[in-house]
Amino acid sequence: MAHQTATRSTAPVPTASDLTTSGPASWSAKRRKRYGWMVTVMLLVLMMISWADKAILGIVAVPLMEDLGINEAQFGLLGSAVFILFGIAQLVAAPIANRVQAKWILLILCLVWSIAQVPVILFASLPALWFSRLLLGAGEGPLAPITMHAVYKWFPARKGATPAALASAGVTLGIVAFAPVLAWVTASFGWKAAFVFVAIIGVIWAVAWLFIGKEGPYTSVKAEREIEGYSGEDETDPLAAAKVAAADQKVKYRRSLLTPSWILAVLCSFFGYWTFTVATTWLPAYFENVMGASTQQSGSLIALPAIWGAVATVGLSWLTELLAARGMSSRYSRGLVLSLATVFSGVMVLAGTLAGSPVLALICFTFGFGTAPALFALTYLVCSEMTSIGQRGAMLQVTNAVVTTGGLLAPAFVGTLVSAAVTPALGYEQSFMLTGVITGVVGLIACLAINQQRDRKKLGLDIA
Image (cartoon, rainbow, N blue to C red; front, top):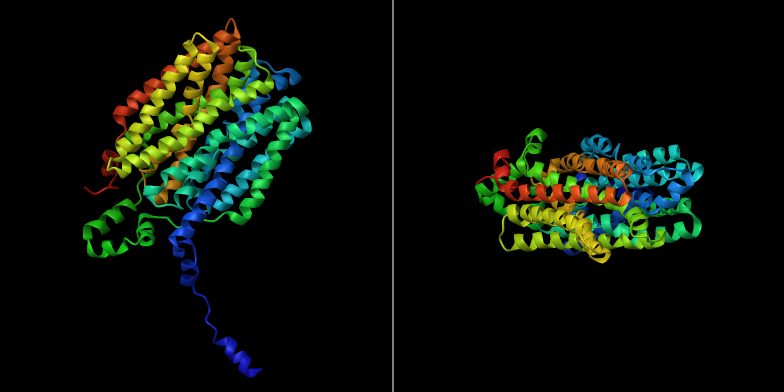
């Protein structure tokens, strides 16, 4: 017994260093990449659920308004309710994002969404809907930037655009996957059943994430160079070491937020968010009231812009990686791609409004409204260049807080125009036309003003 005790006492005790090196940073590149993609897919599904939660109101719009006696102006305000606490929640989450693991933040957010559906399921009244949408907005506000931050930490900077775009594609894929299902559930079992459905899938995701969620190892430029095997160059090349130190230094958020690149990139996605929120809130009602479609048909038609949006989100981000791999600076590979996509979105919404036939209008709206959510991932890429990796989580929260304000204003704006117009069709036409013109003009200005290399040098993040 004495001998056994002595043997046990000489066993090595794991040190903090041992525990650190046993994480993803010490995995093989193949294993790390495989797990990074698994996390990305999980976050894609989470984004899909998030947008199903938001889009559900548009899908059940007509039966809900008839059942509760809600007019267009009241419904427009209700559509904006989800965004009232959206930006506030992101500003609250900004300092937390740099300190708390994304795994736990995302888990809590998803559970909040499911809880937010309960008042509607139990009470089915206008006050219950308001409370539900406010709580949902508070829970969904921090999602997109936390998701992007979590994905970026699983891939080196030069390979992070496509995975981040795939996760961001959940914005549109959520509508593609869930809009027809929610429309069928509403038509078959009533609009309250649709809220039960989204609450259940949120809980299912949360349970799966509890076991799968993990933090990625790419937490700084220095960490990336060590993992990728470049750290030896920093020891022999003073300039390389200085560049790494400059890229990892802290920058005052005020300076980053005042750069032309940040301002214009955010404006592009502000109106992108405005445009896509108009689509998710009002297009189903437009299809029913103006084009004469049924509730189930409207739920299917709204999937068309969403399908294109998923293709555009991944395709445009893949294009940024391709252009960068060919030696093009991020001013062009990211900034110009974002700007031109914004112009295209605005022009197509305007063209759909002026189209002479329903088929042509549907085609233009598909490309116009569908391109809008593809702007988000590109904006995150541009804005993340305006700070260090260590500050990126908070920076993306502030970025998204401003971007999503477009979602707060758009539904109420359209609802007011539709209610005040001589006919609903005229109100839709006016609101869609203004949306298209403003979005296109912002995109043109961004073509000239976004220049990350210029702004990074001014911030001291790049050394010439």
